[in-house]
Image (cartoon, rainbow, N blue to C red; front, top):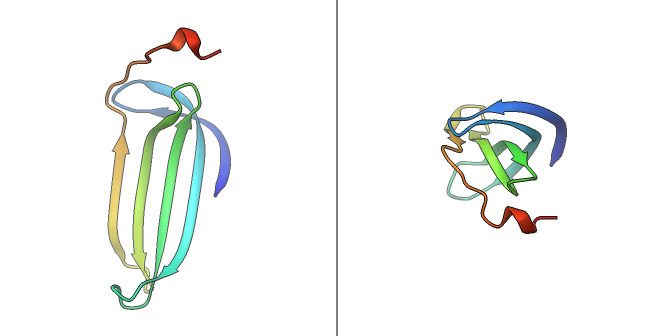
Length: 85
């Protein structure tokens, strides 16, 4: 896991100042013919204690994309914010 720094990210819910986090994993599974690579890029907002967006990608050993998904926050509310001190 690598924290790349703070960036602004735009989602349907709002624009946020977030920490960009990247995870790059090489793995092997008998279900898939050989090895695979899993890539995760997320934008984490500490005040919300959650990711507001993330990209999730899986590639085969040949580099072909098996799956690629993008998830973004569409709405939110902060409950109990007065107690977050």
